[in-house]
Length: 518
Ligand SMILES: Nc1ncnc2c1ncn2[C@@H]1O[C@H](COP(=O)(O)OP(=O)(O)OP(=O)(O)O)[C@@H](O)[C@H]1O
Picture (spheres, helix red, strand yellow):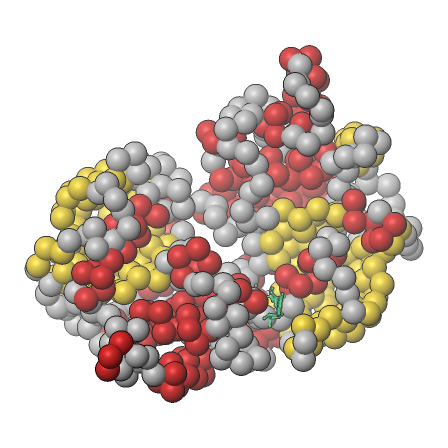
């Protein structure tokens, strides 16, 4: 049994006593609209203590909205929710915690100091810190989640930080955890251990877990039951033992989805379109040499935080202190100018769609026009812009990428994560750049959209684009790449020249075990 102290100072317990009828998170008839847009329709769902419930759904299906309602961030228009028999409003929400993809920890503080944040007035004495350290160690031991209380958070890997977040939620008294795409930023080796830990939390400690993921094999590996939301309605709910990934895909998107290998045909790729010569960014990227030919897709595999964003910055013209050379079509380009790079034919789909890809407060149409204000037909004489051209371009891209939005003028910040990503992709791909740099292009996308993006990248490779794919998704890398390099701690530590690729060797190199790589 694990003892957990709630934020209110009361002591909660985690054990696996048998659930009663009222136990669990019980949602009844949840309904929610945004204006005319009905996002959740009469959703009733029961997550029991000790079970892992996977919630699936296409982009925009309503998963995040349901989670926000569950954590009390958003009121439902209709319906009721109880947690172990207590309504949300009466404190039920204290038993539910969301574990975000972007962690809420202070990097410069230790784990124990983070646990004490907001819970102690004034200076925290050594003995208080020591006691907290002991509580964390005991909780970590019971939960099977290794954790060092006096480690500084900034020294921990993404997987370790995620464990701290989970432990903190349990320590605050949560008995139900909402995990939103918890494997999105993990090394392949960490994914299986996280899923095993999630199972253990449920089975051994009786924690109820809602697992949101777009990776169907993770559902089969870790969940007990799976529910599928489509268009805001819960269209199916069954035990995982009764279902295959193909059936889940059909439930989600209403058709068969194929995410097989899409390497180029054997014909040789063209001349070198993108070359990086000894590119370095102090503290982030060291001596990177890379060549991508026209009609070739080279994948830079790696877990984020290993130099990926510096590489993206260099190729976007945003790395102030880079050295080395970037050549496009054998001509060296000034990488201190985003415009020079764009005019040389480089298009970048950034990993962070919100801070780099979109202006949240502006409409989809304006966001889609952002890099075409200086070129016709959007640019007109005397510095004027054509509203008509902006609208037509927006309608074309929205239709091509099936962006789900009430209107082209809808603010980009109100789109679901997956549809926001489609807008960014659509804008860059529409310019048919000669060199396409795509960072984490399908993160957060549903399988139907992933299939679409993969096919689109293959189409662009076939028209002769040189594509640099920066990705932490091993399936994506192995399915799409003609060549693979692995970036670890800012350096290329392994190269794989020809498929079929050895997934295990690439995965090991991504986790820093180069010896295992070819
Ligand atoms: N604050 C808001 N204002 C207006 N519309 C919103 C708001 N929040 C969400 N929506 C709309 O609700 C719908 C469902 O979005 P939600 O984020 O719940 O989907 P999701 O299933 O989590 O998708 P994804 O997998 O892409 O994250 C979308 O059409 C979205 O545009």
